[in-house]
Length: 103
Image (cartoon, rainbow, N blue to C red; front, side, top):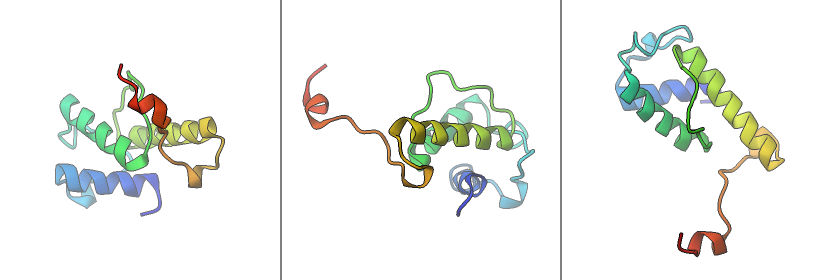
């Protein structure tokens, strides 16, 4: 699985049990029976799989192509913020002293 679309498709097949042949860039989330709650679940899966942090308010995502563009933008932004090329990004982590401090 190399492309964002292929990785997204794997998430959709595994999480939502969708048939792979139904997954095309133009397929709408609604047409795949993914409602707003399902979209939240999908975005959690995306966050974990792509090691990106989601914004508080993600944009409207109507089609799989929209989701792919959103993921690609998050990945690019996380790589730019880290100052590393896209292919060697890691998820941001808190310094140990900060993580151990109570809120």
